[in-house]
Structure formats: C-alpha cells, structure tokens
Amino acid sequence: MARLLTEFGMGSSLRRQDYTEAAVRAVKDALWHNSINLAELFGREKGEMQILVEVGVQAPEQVDAARVSEIFPYGQVEVVVRKGGLDVPRGDGGRPTVIANVAISVALDLEGTA
Image (cartoon, rainbow, N blue to C red; front, top):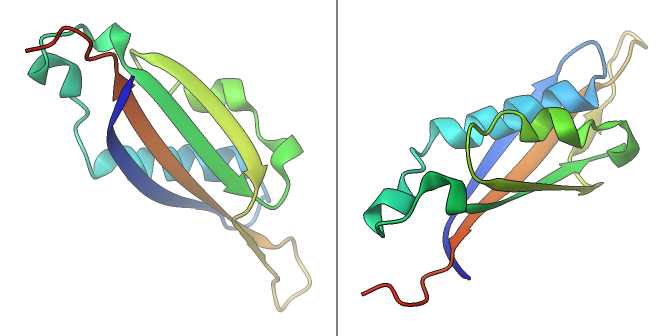
C-alpha cells in the first residue's frame, strides 16, 4: 500500500459539546480542500482506496466512529479516535466549545501499476 494523499481539517461544536458533530465537521472541512479522485489516476476503482481517518478530540469515547465513516461514499474507511483537539471554556460557565482535528490519509495498492 502506498499513501498518496493526506489532508487535514478542523471542526467545532460551539454550544452542544457534541464531539461526533465536531469530528464530522472536521472531516467535511478536510474533504472540502480536496477532491479524492486518486483511484482513477491509477486506473483503479474508488472502492479500492484505503482511507484512514484520524480524529483528535478531548473526549474520544464520545465520538461515534461509524457516523464519521458514513461521510465517505466509497473506499475502505477506518476511523481512529484519540485524545487531541481542544475544549475551549466559555466565560458564561456553559458547555465548552469543542474543537476536533482530523487527518485523512488515502492509500492504494500500486503493485503492478505502470
């Protein structure tokens, strides 16, 4: 497998402290920066792409990884959630603003590709 692309994104949940929604927004932010059409460039099917989504949030156990993976219409998606991101306290004592960071890596098996 050869990693061909890495893209980064950031998403937030301003008031609901929804770590999954922040992660989903971060993935969409990363995808907005890039049209992932690498498979076609190498004569492969989109479904062959290996997509690794790494999510960093302060409460990893609160991220629904299956919901994050549903964003991708094709490819073999793996979502790994770990401690990272940032919770920003609110001055009014309300729930903190949640910030999620993601790194999306796309790989293909290029064995035999000319």
